[in-house]
Amino acid sequence: MQIKIKIPNNDDVKENILSLTKVLNEINSCKENRITFDFSEVSWIPPCCIILLSNKVFELKQKGIKFEYISSREDKVTEHMKRLGFPLGTDIDGSSYYPITHVIKDNYNSKKLGQEIGFLMDNIIEKIPNNINGISYILSELSDNIEDHSEYDCASIMAQYFPTKKEVEIIVFDNGLTIPGVFSKNKINFSNDVKAIEKALSGEISTPKIAQNEVGRGYGLRTCKALSTEDFKGEIYVFSRKGLVISKHNNEHETNILEDPLEGTLICVKIKLPNKEIPFYNKIE
Amino acid sequence: MEKRISLFEVFNNNIVTRNSMSSFFEDLNSLENTKIVLDFENISFISRSCADEYLKQRRASKKKIVEVNMSENVCEMFKLVNRQYQKEGVKFLVDVIPRSKSCSLVFV
Image 1: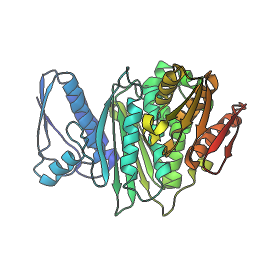
Image 2: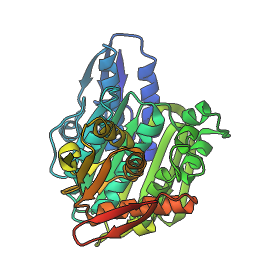
Image 3: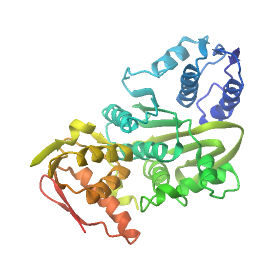
Image 4: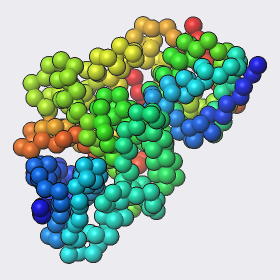
């Protein structure tokens, strides 16, 4: 089966993921044992799409489905995709980015996700001039969320530093239960998937079994959002099942119900680096 | 009988995820040594949930545990977790006392 990758060929995270979820659902419905992704009409693909497609390829491989792809007509796109680790992730470190790394849940090695996130921190932080602790904090909270709540099989992470723009982009995806899915499982009421994400971002609700074990739980996504949008003057995108919540600097807030659900949770954080380190330890409640 | 453990050798520079810490304490508690010195030298970052898990596991452990070479950043994270406990009305740590090259965790 051949699947045409149709995305808007721009850098807009929302537009790209809304288009890609259609493609991913088409892939999910495929019953054949061989799939070809056709990138021929792709003239630009942002990292958030590459990480999702790479995670999907990883999943297909696990299921024993043969995968191949037709490259974009534009060499720069193919090079960009390979550099970031498409199709199966890579351990080749880049000059200003930490490429896609897939972490398979290993019930016999509970340190695995922590070790991978630790390597990512070391690698990306040495490329960034300032604010290392704030970025470490965001990464650690995102990985804790995956580990504590999502019941994932495969988590994918990457980070990129843009020296000219002085921006950092962190992308984390897990193919677990999703935020609304975790809420449903724990009998937490919510009216739709956007409301579930908003509750998680507000820190209003944490998974009960976790909350019993940690006083003050529920700080994770809330503090990530606050640090990213207020201190780092950036933006955070949370896609989970049919919900999308975007929070930006200056209290800009946007939500959307996705037509095609995402099987997992994708969090994309884009932050701007200030000139000096942010004393975030005292600012977090 | 005392044993010194370099956390850098166990975790590298960053200590991340709650499970990593609970798994570490499982190993630590199975040691025969009664006194354990945990050396935080070269640990540049500990996540909030790891610091939280550390405090819980350390309090529950029957070992005599002493921390050394804890950096200012690591101390700050323990202070942050302690503030969150205090906010919830739970007494866990009395204080995190800054010292010249390390910090001391003072438990209730």
